[in-house]
Length: 158
Figure (cartoon, rainbow, N blue to C red):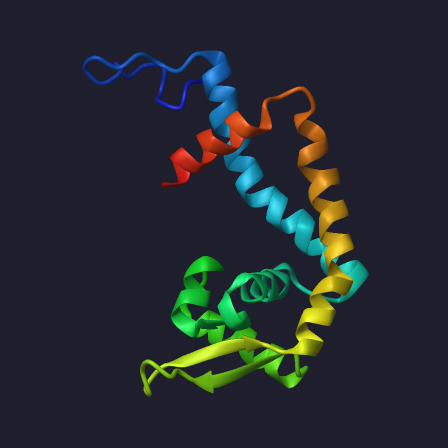
């Protein structure tokens, strides 16, 4: 396996090249970042006819106070642009599972609100998501300290 830096290039001053295990980890993580969401999305669409981004939108709204979030905050936690989040919420509004209301704090802003039927839809989709997360991710971590791994990944993310 070749190093992330070209083997012919000298490493930056004071830096050690990656060990084969470190390089394997970095490359595997890069693949997981792309493969895992696709696998979860495939399962949700096949079994629930719900894309992962819609599931995540409902999930985040269900966890928010009053089951509502400012559109910009919802976009941020779902890692979408505001315009992308607006398109998702518009699709969910047509299904009657989310509605948009004017923000009480800022008359220019909008909040997305999870409706009762949206919460029901989320609870219907939850078993599929749970099984998919276990099958495609957690089942592969057997024997690892999940708490330590979660803390390490959170440190990397922040």
